[in-house]
Length: 216
Ligand code: B16
Ligand code: MG
Image 1: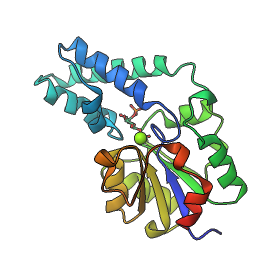
Image 2: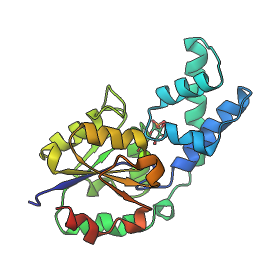
Image 3: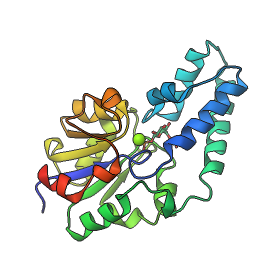
Image 4: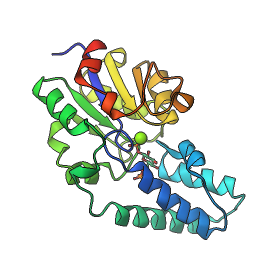
């Protein structure tokens, strides 16, 4: 058994879905009469669907009833699902497919720790489900990132203590979750957004077996 295990975020780490979440939320904002920039979207990465809508409504200074909010949540997810309906392995981020197969071959445990309620559907489309030792997603948690719950459950499922888990995340909320869960945090993206991570890599092409082994 390797000394450390890895917990992967999904959107923005394994697969390039962050752009589709953005397109779907931007359409909701536009339909409500305001715009929503890519920079502002950073705050929604890793954040649950419900909390993302609350953030948008606050930004647009819009007050809605729960029924209206529920309609928007359904509409956002329908739009998102239609954007990912043809998803296949070509949408995986650079080097990730090879890395997951190499980790699996080396018997290094890894789990999924995603806020998305669509995570299992995406892993199936990418033919990755069976590689993971555990899958924890938005359907399994009561507290969203930056709360560490999703990663704590994942660590427990693969039988590793938090300090021996390396979390790979593209979002500020996810890095905060990993840090407050006492895990090793690796941010994928800009130093400006992910500066509180223990390590920051520019993109997934830098997330190599050699790098991960250096943390083990
Ligand atoms: P869903 P991750 C997160 O996934 C996304 O980063 C975030 O943008 C999205 O709002 C959230 O999942 C919920 O997704 O609407 O599919 O349930 O990055 O934690 O894998
Ligand atoms: Mg993410």
